[in-house]
Length: 305
Image: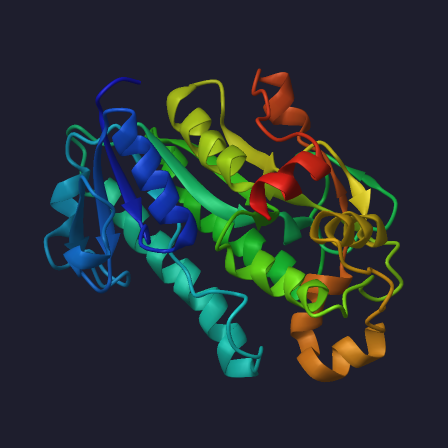
């Protein structure tokens, strides 16, 4: 895929900025759909186009004509703000309305329609799964984020009857400099108060930012990639082992546990992000020939920290 046009919805966030910069570096034309429409927030070489993420009005749909692919990253952050009922409703509806608008715009673009839609999803699709080994064929879970991911993916799949190849990137916690969730995760270690979360036996899924960006490009460029794709590194660890590696990388202790009742009290439903685990594998990506840049946890932490 050389020198093509890619449209990114919600591309001014952390992942979107890095993805758009990478695509520009590889010679692609990148259009970012942003509710702010502020060109100052765009990466060099990227053009921002305003949209409201709720409808096909405003002329942004014209950007789809002649585009090779569209990436959907739009949705309220799950990491900022306590999960009140109102916030949880916003997390869900922001994803469904934006994805619905994208699919409707694709339906309105019969000529020169993008051939692929790569839509973000979460590894939380599988819920809290204990010791079960998870692949893309595994059943969904029943947690709040699992239900959000299921409905989000179902909305994106509405593009398939239009002849659009749909890829669903079920993304784990991202390791990267400046990554919001990772920064919060390592903060207790920097303050000499890090350690296991809950009992620490839950399986922890992660992916380095460079691999996540590369997987988006892999999904855009390879016609064999379709349906769900676990965006997780192959080095699966229990959470207490991850805590130990973070402590080692920062030269800090990793023995201060954060008990589950305390996390539940402090965070409410949001504690699921820390306490739930799943032994998810990147089986499909590896089978299709993707080679991870950072397959090992210590190397990923060294690069990030």
